[in-house]
Amino acid sequence: MKTHIFLGLLFVGLWANAQIVYHDASQFALLGRATNSTLTRYERLPDSLQSKVRPVLWNLGQNTAGLAVRFRTNSTTVSAQWTVRFDNVMNHMALTGIKGLDLYCLEDTVWRFAGVGRPSGKENKATLVAHMEPKMREFLLYLPLYDGITDLQIGVDSLSEILLPAINLPVREKPIVFYGTSILQGGCATRPGMAHTNILSRWLNRETINLGFSGNGLLDVEIAEIMAHIDASVYVLDFAPNCQAARIDSLAERFYKIIRERQPHTPILFVENPVYPYSFYNKQVADDIASRNESINRIFHLLKEKGDKNIWLLKSENMIGHDGEATVDGEHFTDLGFMRYAEFLYPILQKHMGQ
View 1 (cartoon, rainbow, N blue to C red):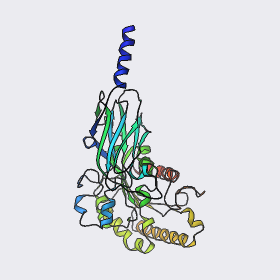
View 2 (view 1 turned 90 degrees about the vertical axis):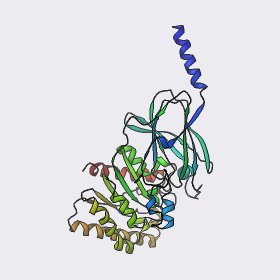
View 3 (view 1 turned 135 degrees about the horizontal axis):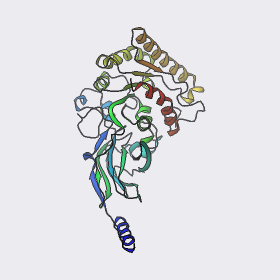
């Protein structure tokens, strides 16, 4: 009995004195990419588009919104070192959301928040979680929403192992593909895991692909072509916040057709423009939102009349509640707004993703 106690204390002591060893995250699974044909690992657009799309769109494609690293380890500590591409700063979004990391741990089939990596600048180092029992766990590490990553190292105890995931969660087959604007990219979640695409990925345990481009969800045909080559379970088209009615009228059907011609049966969900809280007072904004939504409805009903039975329209009235408390600036969502939006989308996606 004394021998067992001694060995147990010795084992605990060894773990307590273990050093952190860093491992290049490129050896682990990377979720959330629309294509593997990127210039560097942590990008969202294929290298073939570098000279074909607008420079601002290309740069936004280097933001890592929706990307996540999957691994498992029996370490008592998980740390990270990461270098961001742009070192972006915004006056309405927390740095942890812009260029921080966000760690989740799998408990049975449920993902639970474990810790956040707070950024300090271009070069960053942080302990995400510490003092855990040394047992094998599955982890999901979200990357920054509004910056890029050029290097990422995951730190674990020297006495531990860090391995590829043993469980296929979130399920990687037939991801949900989202297209949209700054809100869809994650503005202005306080940490990456609180973007609604990432929330839904955890709740549905299905990989999601985030093709949100801040200020640039302008129905570029090149993005539709990327989406069309993904064997998705559902496509979510959430472009209205960047597209005025005339642009929707002229480009939305073409964007849709590029996807539909290659994916004739996959459900496509059109999303109305959110009802921004400040539009309650600003009549010009309210009229503009109404005009955009009228255009989306017109396109949607036209396509239905042409016989497409696998399209749906998400109305915006109940999207983020009615108390006006779900945004940071009257438009971009806070964590509360993203949670409400995820709750709104969840049953719709759950219903259609299995078709």
